[in-house]
Length: 129
Image (cartoon, rainbow, N blue to C red; front, top):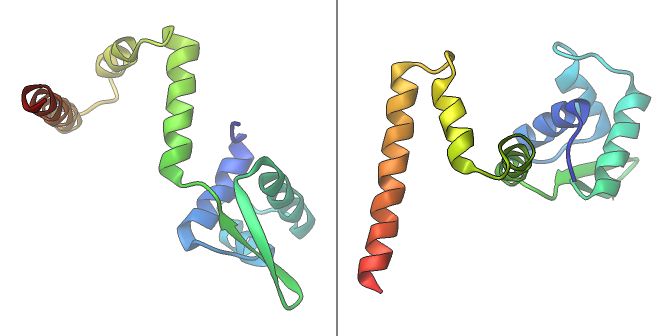
């Protein structure tokens, strides 16, 4: 299941604090994306139904916690992006990213370090088997 842009904004707030009430999320959003309390309540209910959040009752308020990490959602979204736009080719995705004019030399070097680390890890497993 995928997050809509609005759901992602709400999840960012909850991930940032690890648990929150609807009112706390509304406050978190006040400067970047002001929303009515009922809108936040509805959206958090949808996120709970989709399995992204769980809640427990504390006094008169529900306290929401993430069921998934930002990294898990990111990996899933990246897989979907790769499948949808690059025919499942991770190489195609990386090639397009590297051709992007938005990457700095430092970012390209960081990508190279990660690729080299992965190669060392894979070579170590193959050689150690």
